[in-house]
Length: 594
Image (cartoon, rainbow, N blue to C red):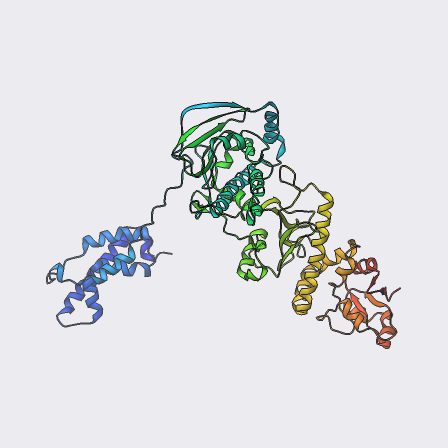
C-alpha cells in the first residue's frame, strides 16, 4: 500500500520527493566547508535524483510513479554553485544506482528451424503408379490399420532412427565418414500446417526410394538386416536397435497428410532426389537440389489434423512413444528425449538419480521410488525390464479409483502399449515400470502382441520375479518392508485371495499383529511357524475390530493360558484371505472362533 501522501495523486508524489531531495542536497552543500558527515557528502555527490532513487523502494513507490518523479526531480534539482567540473566529480554512486535501476535486456530468442528448407526438386518428374493390390493396402493402412492417428509420429521417428542406425553401423564397418552428431530433427509450422521429420543417416538413392516407398509392406530395415546376414556380418547391437519390420509405418503419414514429400540423398552420392505423393495410388520422383545427406519427410497436414502442427502436441507424443530411441530427438531446435533407457544397461551401472528420473517419467510423480528392480531374462523370450514401487498407494487414501496398470510395453525402445493390462495380474497394478523385448510377436500395426500363449507365459515369469523381489526386500530390512506393507498390504491380500497359483508365494509377504508382540511389530506367517509350540500343527488367527476386542474375546482365553500364539486380524476381509489360502507351509490356517 502507498504512503498516505502518495494516495493524493501521482503529481503530489514527485513534487514532495523533489522538494525533499533538493533540501537534502542544499544542506549537504552548506555543510561541505565544515567537513560535515560522510552522509552529507554522499548526498551531495549523487544529487537529488540519487536520493529519490534510493528512497523510492523504502516508500513503497510503484515503478510507474518512480519513472515520473525521477524525471521531474531531475528538472528541479539545482546545480551547486561551487561544483567542480564534471570530470572531477565522483560518479561511482550514480553509475551503480543506474546499473541497479536499469533492467538487463533479454537476449533475443534464436530463430526456430523452418520446415521449409533449401531442398527443391529440379527437372521433370517421373510419374509412377502403385500396383492395384498396393493401392488397396495403402487404403487399409491409411484408414483401418492404426487405432490412433498420433502413432504416425512414432512411426516416422522410428524410420529416422533406423536410418541413423544403418549409417552408424555402415560407418563402423567401412572406411566411411564420421558418424558423430547423428540425430532426429522434427520441425513444425502451425501457420502453414506443416510438420517435418529429418535424419542425417544413410539416405536413399533413386532406386531405393522406388523400392522402399513405392512398394508397401517392403521393409528396407528388414532387407538391411538380411543383407548383413548374407554377408555373415556380426549384427551386434544394430539388430536390436533397428525398429522397422513390416514396411508400412511410413504410410501412416497419409492418415494426417494431404501431401507427403520426401527428400533424400544417399551417403556417398552427389545428387539428391524428391519423392512426392498424395496417397492416391501414384507418386512422382525427380532429382532435387539443396538436399543434405540423409532423409527429410515433409507432411502437408489435412484440415482435421492441423493439431499435429503444434509444438506442444508433438512434444507430448514424442514423450509418450519415442523418449528412449537410441538417438537425440530435437523439436524445433530443442532436445526432447533426455531420459535414458535404463533397462538396456547393466544394473550396477545405474545410479539412484537415473532411477528417479526414469520413474518420474513413466509414473508422472515427483517423488522417487521406494524400491527398484532391473530384470533381464531370455525365456520365454528375450526381455529387458525395470520395475518400481511407488512411495504411496493412491487407492488407499481414496485419491483415485482403481488405478490403471503401471507397466508399459516397449519393443526396441519404442512404446507399443501403455498401461499394458496383460503383463502383470491386476493386484500388481500399482507396480510401475517398462518391459522391452526385441522378439515380441507384434501385429502389423505394432500396437499389440499376436501370440496369446506367449504373453501368458511372459506374465507368469514377470509375476513370479516381482514376488521374489518383494520377498528379498523384506529380508534386507523388515522395518522398511513394513512401511511398504502399510501402503500395499491390501493389494497383496487381494492377490492371495484371487491367485491360487501364486497365493502360497504371496502369503510369505503377508504381515499380521500377533498376541506375542505389540501392534507395531507385525509378524509374517513364516515367523509364526518358526515359533510354534512342540506338537502344534495349526496356525491360529482371530478376526476382531481391534486388539482390545481380540484380547477380551472369550475364544482367546484358552489360547492365552496355554501360551499359544494367535494372529489378530483387524479387517473382515482377512477371514476371506486366510480362508482361501487354507494352509501355509503345510500348516492349516484356522480361526479360533470355529
